[in-house]
Image (cartoon, rainbow, N blue to C red; front, side, top):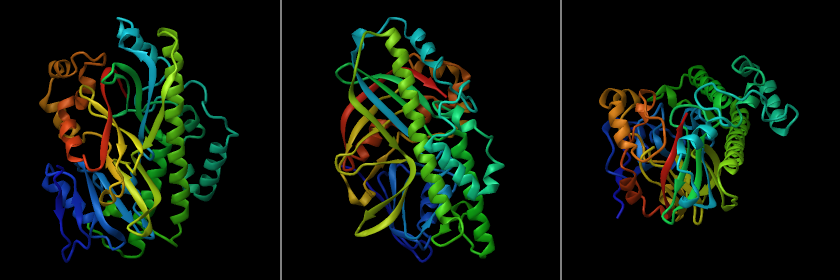
Length: 398
């Protein structure tokens, strides 16, 4: 049975915090309590079983708010999420040389920070382009933070950090394609811009917060509707970014593998985003920072690390979690700690059997830097049911 850690309200902490694990360090617990001290929080703050320290707001938290939004809680990787699809192929259809297949995929999906395509993947006269033009016109300072047109070239690219592309096999040896990415440089610029505006508002109105990164934008404030419009645009861009990569991957796989079809409609779910939803009888803003929607029947994907299982899940619609579940295993060590603690040999051992990079450049993503995914899944058995367990055979890191 899942075990909850509950922080009841205090004089400073106005709202309860409910966390779906006991594996939570003091700093993360204090960060969750600081968020729960804000007056516009609705009902309680929920922490998923993969919670860990974030900037301002905790990664793995679900924050319900009334007439206010915290831009840093959404963060700068707006709309980051997972796209996964099952193919009509099995392990027996795969070539012996998976390295060649990995290189072929890398040739059509640019990976790494700042990388982009040689030609724009989204037209300058598209609805997406028109939407961005409107946002920039209404926020002229944002224009200075954006390289003109670059977002159109970065569409269909992976990015860096923990973003990845994988080929996986499920419990019946069916082949799955899975990838993790967000809104790239343009989402980062939008996030940073509105976080700065929120902080300026706090200074202007002499509002003192327990953490400056919890700066918020209230309904009626100058940037309120502008932020909603911009973050909604970035979330749509992130979704399209993943779709473009999925299409490119399927085209390249068709050259190397037998004829196939997609037998499981692609699951495309955000885990860094805001949405208007009804919870406990009231319409509120829900910010999922490192969490996916798990309403009754919702399909989602919870990835492990580059050497462990990932899971396709179906939501159980638990109201206490605001219909949410974890977005992954959650980090156990910071990137700096992982680099200090582990070696390339450790990486090779922990990713045995997976075709992937095994060099010092990805040690910070070593499996042991993350929490145990099976424990995370056990702790949220009242939030989701497992539909498929996936094991990686090819991993491409950003």
